[in-house]
Image (tube, rainbow, N blue to C red; front, side, top):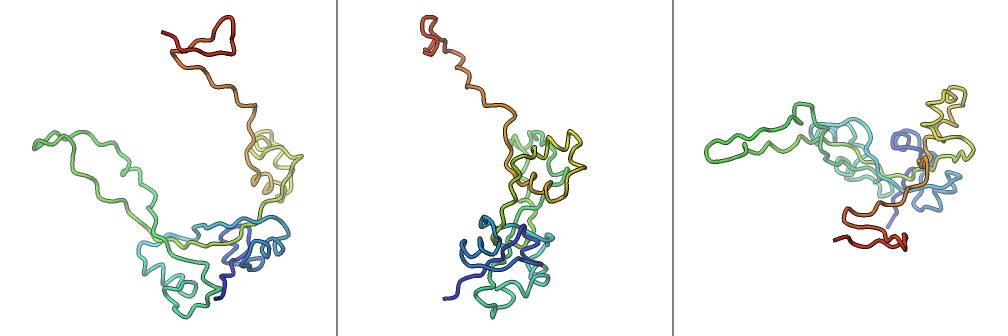
Amino acid sequence: MTAILYPVAANGEAALAAPRGRAARESQARSLAGRDVAFTTEAVGPAFATREAALDAYGPRLEDATPSLAAEDRFCRLAETVAPAQRTELAPVSPANSDGRRWPAAKPAPRTVWRLQVSYWRMAGDRVAEAPQARRARRSGEASALPPETLRAMADQPLRPFKPQQALDIGLFEVRLPEAPHIVVPDE
């Protein structure tokens, strides 16, 4: 059986358009990328109202539209997702109190759309240890002087807390013993 060759890219759009290469295993993807990689699946492209419209747009990439698609090229699939809600759909509902029922009839199911899901090896962003976090650099104004590669690497870093997490508070009906403040006991 032939393994699926997943694209190696920085994001889903790049995985479709211009991947750095294709690999079946993490070790192969890491050597192609030259850095750490993580396997991910991401929705890309526009949303389509019907499955047929999505098949027309992405036909050559999908096994459903092209049954003779090679096994190593099966890294794309269609998925039905819930469409973002409109403002009018989120309006609160007031009780109806009619015909012996307190609430009105249930709303219809939410609208769904079809999106292309791409599975690929995502390249890890460059770590910039000496640079501040992106949110702090943006607020201070020093972000305009930094090159775009540094800004992208700063945005890929995980967020760090501003200060260490404080200890949890004790409960409402608990007190600390005066003679041993490290012990918390229930209050009457």
